[in-house]
Length: 452
Image (cartoon, rainbow, N blue to C red; front, top):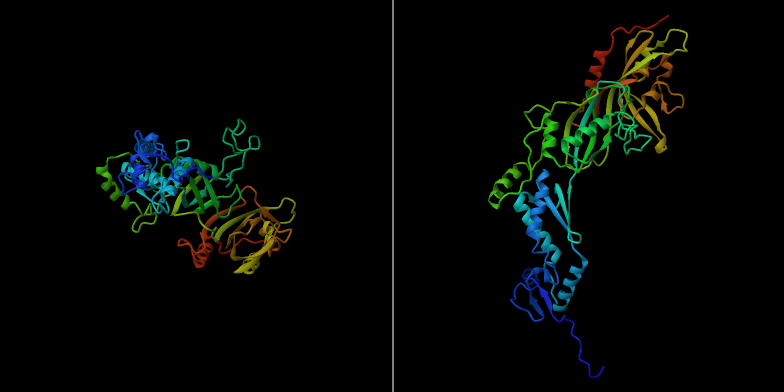
């Protein structure tokens, strides 16, 4: 309109603290429309957050004392009103390509935490992520999960592999389940209790490699599995417990002076490769006895979650008992069953995937036949349900042992025992010749058979 002055796009006066002024105008000492202010809390952009960084860094370093880690990353959440105010200023003065408030806070805070703790800043795979919210002034420490491959064994019967939630409370914990949240003791619950205490973690997630009956034993080298230790506070100490069965000197994150920073960085450099469970010239870790006949052994420390569950082969003893409804003496055709299942493929139906898969049976040996009980030794691919392999009424496994073991059923008191589980392609995998040799050593030279 005529007679009115044209309004300026710049704000009348912007109040900035010294740090924000240097960030926005690094080559200037003064700027029209901008005034330096004290205290820093009057700054229109940071509202004093930059001045509070030293105190915040000391508080974070104090919280990190209870965590073991070698590297970290800081993430910050900045109130939108501060970022919008900075955008308005930069638009008015046409400022481009410079570090913004969020980047400066994150960089400065990370540097001070590194100086106080002696830990390195890592952006790709940090062991600890520190989330700082300047909206509500909260700090959250999120440790990276620890992934390991281990093996477990069972020397007592009646312990299931997986835990079942209590039917009364649904896993919350009540008087009916002893406030454990599960129906009965299991391999999963025993190992979860041990690992969460060793690593001071929030919990564990298991990836099983096959399963067995709760009345079956797991012998020899045990059954391998993967486990994720969620939000562990102790990393090195937890690994030392798994390696040696005892707690070594704990590596804590204590606040230190800047003079000790170089010394600690040298120590961290030596530990940068992490715990290695396959040192040459050293004995492998010994199994750790837990309770109720369950033992645990560390196989390998992983950098991340496994992308897939590996295939495996196993050797097992199948225990048979005479069928109470069978009047005559049971009979096993040892020669026929061993000949039929020598390097033989069987077809297994997988109902949940609506498909049929081919599995290999290397051999079957008759180790014992007393007329009241019998024992078979089998070496085969994982994923073959032994109950269906022994007595198959619905063709879910074909061929089966049914026609060769007349009058016998699986002994429910001890259905089958796992002698060894070998991952296909793993360094620890025994070849088929070794498995065959073990079978020959366990096989009777002259099986007791009823030839009448």
